[in-house]
Picture 1 (cartoon, rainbow, N blue to C red):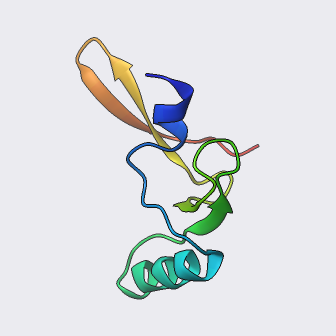
Picture 2: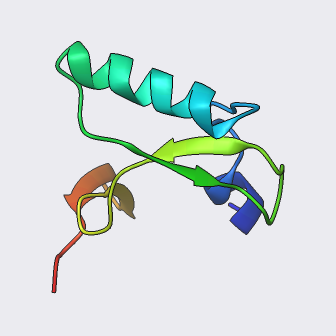
Length: 74
C-alpha cells in the first residue's frame, strides 16, 4: 500500500473546512466518534476527517488477517 493510498484514497473529501466540520458534527450527534478536520496539502488539496492525536485506530496485518489496534498515547 502506498503512502497516497493510506493518506488520501478512500477517505471522504470536502471542498471546504466548513463542509468537513458540518459532517464531523453530524457524525458526533448520531453517536459517532469525535473527529477533527485536516487539510490534505500533500495529495488532493481538499479536507478530510480524522481522529484526534492519540485516538486513531489502525489495522495491522497478521498471519490470521487484519487486527485493529488502538494508537497508544504518550
